[in-house]
Length: 102
Image 1: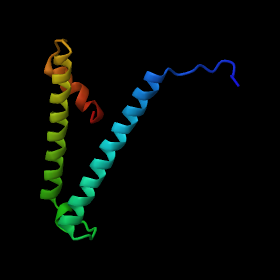
Image 2 (image 1 turned 180 degrees about the vertical axis):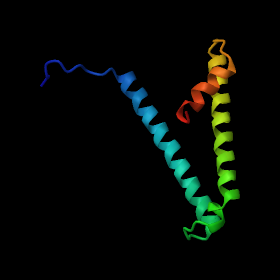
Image 3 (image 1 turned 135 degrees about the horizontal axis):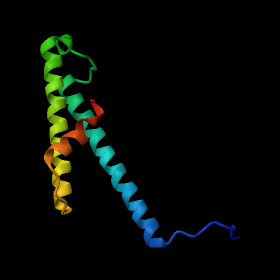
């Protein structure tokens, strides 16, 4: 039975899509399992938020880590764009990365 208007997806394309979804599932499962193992190892299985995490020093450290994360992400994006052969100033990358915060 053939449905009119429904096209058959070629086999290599469907295998490629399946492979991408499989790799994505592997990535997420490894990420979540590693987070669980680290949490279980360091907190002995108890979920608790330390009170000093919400102190001024704790929040300042979290903001600094977030800033470093955004800078590393911008550097990664810059390297990918340069690897593709495009010339772009790093200031434009900073604008792209920190647009969310503006």
